[in-house]
Image (cartoon, rainbow, N blue to C red; front, top):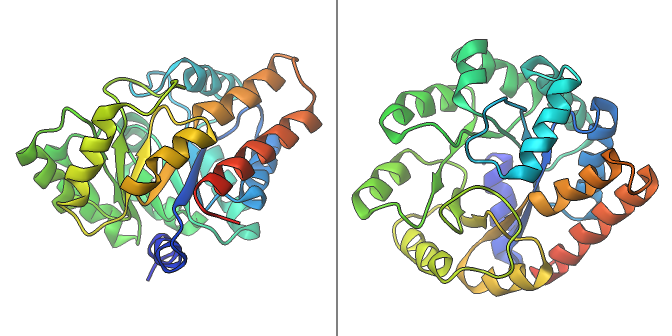
Length: 270
């Protein structure tokens, strides 16, 4: 049983939902990025997604796009993210997943990237622009290195395509709450509930909801329908406030911890 499987199994046993948090690797800089990852873990995150910055992030909303640009301007690329994952793994036991796009992986070399990611201590990968038609071969290569390739499905994903995606899925299924990009939204969309119900009826894997969840109330609303929630932009925005000079380093870390703890409690965690 790998770290992702073990984490969800433990959550099921306790009757809790997993809190998955996202942070852009290298934002605002590599040293502070590692501190942010540790802060999220200590505040209650059950799994952390670490973004690999890319110049054309099709699935990212404005907050995460700007975070990626800040990281890129610091010279952060695949090598630096792999080193960041390795540094985090030396201090943390929770699952770590790299969120990236096809271009950086292919440019680095697919098998080389997977080998290095596994050696660094990553547990899985999320590649939003990987089409299901090409996914099987990539998933097999990832699995050969012990990495889960975690798919995204959207409200617009039809039944046949959903079945094809789920046949390749490992780790958990990332359900996108709305059609569009990441970002904070006011409430949980009705189509998100329908999607979660469809996916849960089709797979034995844990089903998690992301894109738009920013507040504990939204996380609590999703609890009956999923195995976990994914929060990204709301946390990255706090880092942006620091990068823009609106808050101090200490306040940034404090706010990240407070938001993470509040979300954790909303999901039934201690």
